Structures are given as C-alpha cells and as structure tokens.
View 1 (tube, rainbow, N blue to C red):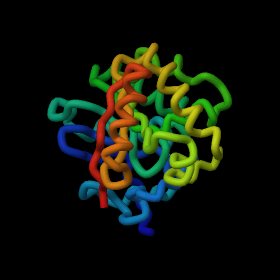
View 2 (cartoon, rainbow, N blue to C red):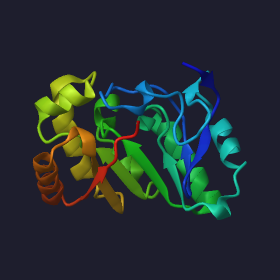
View 3 (cartoon, rainbow, N blue to C red):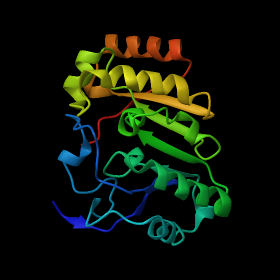
View 4 (cartoon, rainbow, N blue to C red):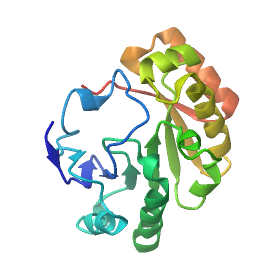
Length: 204
C-alpha cells in the first residue's frame, strides 16, 4: 500500500475530492483491494486526513473552467467527514459555482446517528448511492458493513429522505456482481423511491 497526499484528481471532465480513507464498509468488489489509485491517479491512500483549507487549496490548483463537476469520492466514504465535506462544497459553490456530487454508501444517518439528509440542501446537486443489492442479506454479504444487517434499510431510508433536499439522486449496482434479474429488481426499488438507477461497470 503506497501512501501519498493526493487530495484531488481528474476523472474525465470532473475533479474528484479524496478527503478520507475511512469507510464503514469493506465491499467485496471495492477498487481499493486492487490498486493504490484510480483512473491513473497518484496513490489515494492518505498519509493523513487533510484540513478543509488544504482541500480547498488543492481545488484551487485546477483550472475549473475545464471541468463540469466536483465529485466527493476518493478512497473512503466521504460522508464520514460530512461537516468538513459540506464546508468544501460551500467553498466550491461560492467560488466556482460548480455542480457538486457525492458518491456514497448512503449510511451517513448511521454514522452520525441522526437524519443527515437536510444537511445536503443547497450544497450538493447529486447524490449517488451504492444500492449494491436487492435485499438486506445480500447487501451485507457484498458490503460487509460494520453497522450490520440494519444497513440496507437505513440506506434506503436515506435515499427516500435525501431526494427531498437534493435535485438529483441516483442509486447504483455493479454489473459484474448482479444478475439481470437483480438489476430488474433494483430498477423496481428505484422506481418505488422515485430515484434513478445506474448500472455501473466493475472497476478492476
């Protein structure tokens, strides 16, 4: 495991923000098990967690006129640092007026033991939630969540709540770890909540 201090990196037309390596899950298909970085980035394992000021300074090194979106993702669950993340998102909005997205497990309610959805309002434009499975047992097998069997229902509840505050909510499953039947069921779940489904490729 190579460590560095890569706080921001480019993926296509977007800039990704890497604020933490902590995560309540240890998904069987996680990219972190296969590589030290992603999409040609430097290692994303952090020597230490950055301050809000350090993240903002890293963002300022990019010519934002060339990019479409700021994505909070990296090699950890970004909402572990939700308060700090939202301060960075506020900075992005005020300085660059750019769209913001969080790629998340959707477990921030369990992390903070409260309804976190209202906190996203006005600061986050898209929340992409890892649905991963169509029942709580398979979800736990895939994600190995430290919160246990209650994780799945908490994630679905968060999805229902956060769409009240965020314009675009998407749920995702990974193509190589779900069958066509499961993907159809995932679509039904998303339809019932009123959010979009994205079937994303497995990243090796």
